[in-house]
Length: 104
Image 1: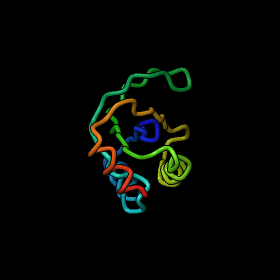
Image 2 (image 1 turned 180 degrees about the vertical axis):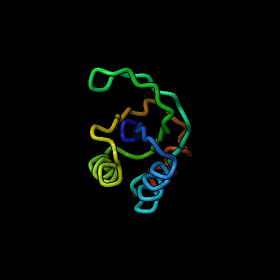
Image 3 (image 1 turned 60 degrees about the horizontal axis):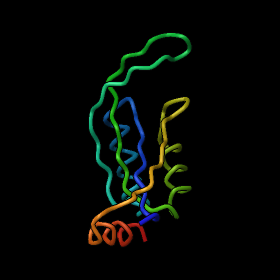
C-alpha cells in the first residue's frame, strides 16, 4: 500500500489545472487527477490573501513522484507552488491495482 501516493497541488486558474492534469495523465505519471475549486486564505509577502484556487488531487505511485513534481513545476505559474505528497495507507485492492497499472 505504501507505494500509492496522493499529491496535492493548488493553482490559480482552471486552465492551468487542466494543463497539469492532462500532462500527468497523458504521460502516465498519474492514473487520475481530480480538480475542485477551493478558497485559500494565507499571508503572502506580509499581505492577507483570500483566493479562489483549484485543488488538484493526483493519484500516482511513489516511484513516479520525481517526474510528477518536475512536470508540475514545468506547467505551474506560482513562484512557490504547493506540492504535497501523502502516502495512501489503505485502499481497495482493485483501485490500487488500477493506479499501479495506469502509471506503470
